[in-house]
Amino acid sequence: MAKVRLHARQVQCATQLSPARHRAGELRGRVSRATTPSSAITTPTAATAPAKITKVPAGPRSSNRITPRLPSGIYHCPSFPDDTINYFLGVHWLRIHEGRFDLMTSDIRHSSEYILSGDCAHARLYCPPFGQSQLYKFTDDCDKDDMLWNCLAYFGEDYGMWAHPAGNNVLFGDYHVAAYRKFDPKYMTYNPKQLGQDFGDITPP
Image 1 (cartoon, rainbow, N blue to C red):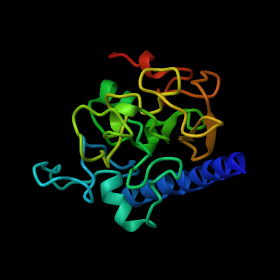
Image 2: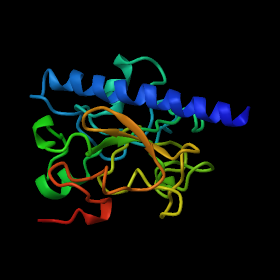
Image 3: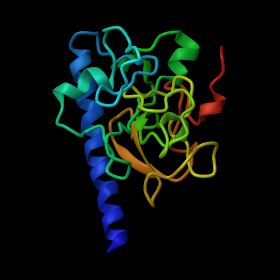
Image 4: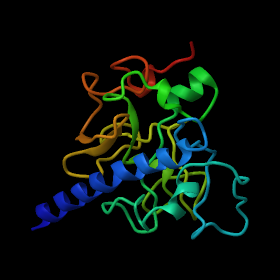
């Protein structure tokens, strides 16, 4: 019964992950020349942010700007604790190579392999006691991206975990979702223009 329940959570996660980012891209693309939502610096969730934390100035961000237009809970993976946002936006290559944070659909040459989003499984991006964040102790980042941290960290990697028994759900640039227990260069890349590049392979040009 436990295995069935865990599998059901992974299926639910995969089901809502794809339309969440697909719909988010459409919403922003209508006004931003086919770009995905922009990333931002760490943004605390409105529900849990203490008064002393200053939110990022208003602007076109990802989860915190899109969530109000989407069904409640669509950015929350059922395998994670309540009141957390568990999906990220892939902008690591973009930050290093282009110095910008709004990935355009035209940037993605290998859409079937490019890691656009997925389960954020990096413990440093969640506050205690579930996570190991050292910056925020009372609130999670509601605008998760892999600008600096490898959000899609797997069990056995630094601060990594498996969100589901079958691994972490990954959303690719063509909007299909699949589960992986480790990075597989045959099927995945963090570089939208080159196949097989892992997170650490992305270096300045």
